[in-house]
Image (cartoon, rainbow, N blue to C red; front, side):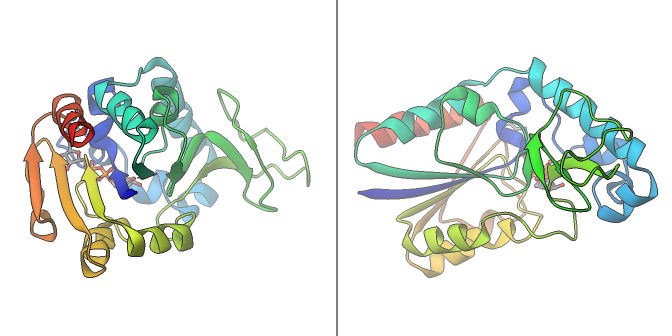
Length: 230
Ligand code: APR
């Protein structure tokens, strides 16, 4: 059984119309990370944070999975391949394309939680500072998204999978944010082949044995087709 770990980033959803973070006009050019993607920013101005994620949740609902999402779902269904899809993305386009074995290590726009008691529930379309937690009644509802300074989800499961992988593929990520930025090196140290798929070589291209470049909607289906032909 060919064990493949795939790490995706914002670039895999770019052709679905969702903004990436570090492009010139990306999300971090429009908003300060400390204002909208940290617990401190949420405590300082919860309304600004909830409005930021309401907007991204609406963009996500209006977006459709692209050929890259669909190809990754087809790879997961193919016999002979054990595929774990670890995404840094908070959109649900992988699931809407049919991927099932997905870990959202940075959380998900369609989940909400209470900042006080940790109770979780499916996120409504729009969250507001007047919403109350159904369990503790606190007005502390927030998106269930991992902010800077918080612990990514399911790291033990990801680390265990990296040790077993035959192949690690990073798709549409700039490789700038830890711990995801270290996954290629970890996989390689455990004997996995490593492949970067991106629209252009990234600053961490040297962490990968191979690289293929072009829009994810073209490069990912071509790569999956090649794997399925083997
Ligand atoms: N096809 C393939 N790759 C693309 C495309 C495309 N059409 N468009 C952009 N890219 C690539 C860019 O070259 C870049 O390497 O996608 C990557 C996007 O990088 P970032 O904007 O940094 O997004 P990402 O790597 O997902 O960020 C990781 O940082 O801010 C945090 O939590 C946030 O999950 C996010 C994490």
